[in-house]
Image 1 (spheres, rainbow, N blue to C red):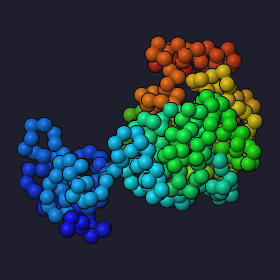
Image 2: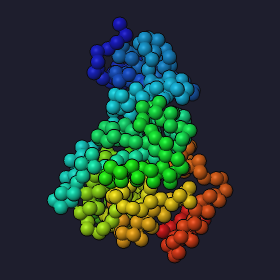
Image 3: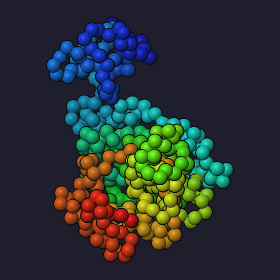
Length: 379
């Protein structure tokens, strides 16, 4: 009696009970697709309301579960979240549901004939997610699940390189997880595994929410003009696999000799459009890059800022890198619990130590970022 036919949309607002209005917030991941949700207008404190297909209003998930006779969404605690993540991935979904990505051919259609000739097959790439201490944190589980879901949805077989203590926790999420060691050890193991298979290596951080390509060749004189141009530009929410294949095709076709391709290092689209579409001698962010069978490796003496050193190593050996300034990431960085963030100390001494190491190893290449303090560096 309490089940509407599958595929039935939620009730339109005109049929909702009185005293509730729409709520401009993400839909709860556990709420059945044919239920609507809003917020009560007759309460002093915010109270979410869930409207059933039979026009009744409920306020609590456990009551709705009793009515429907089934558990909705993740259970209580970390074990419940891990079980939910695994079940979602088995359906090919992320934490909240199906992944919504642009078709690959929309991005590949922007390649020239020469670049398309260098477009690799998915099987030619080794996809490695570098992670640590996030499979037992609720927010970490959510983000890791979404990264894995986007990779699976776009055809990748992913290996997670994680800290030794967390291997089993990641496997409980349904991931293929292997012991990676510390940050640079994990990165180097991924590079070695790719080399043993004669594949290019794609390394991905575990907290990326999306990849966006801005289809414009405009180069703006300042950030304000760039913001206007970014709003005007056609934007594609692309898959990580399509992004990696696109970068590798363009880098190989460029003839520059570059073996390291990456994205604009900030999420600021206005700033990105202040640069040309491609740079060949700038910093490559470690959150997402493609490494094309180079002997360059990460410096094991670094626990932070290892991607700056890796970029410098590539420039010293190959003379160029390939950075696409029209491809941007949505990433959680320094406020994200676990991962490399746990390597930082409140006083910032570990970051300053890393900067001193970079300056000694690469004289004249790195200096402190005057705009952001002495724990940030400019290449």
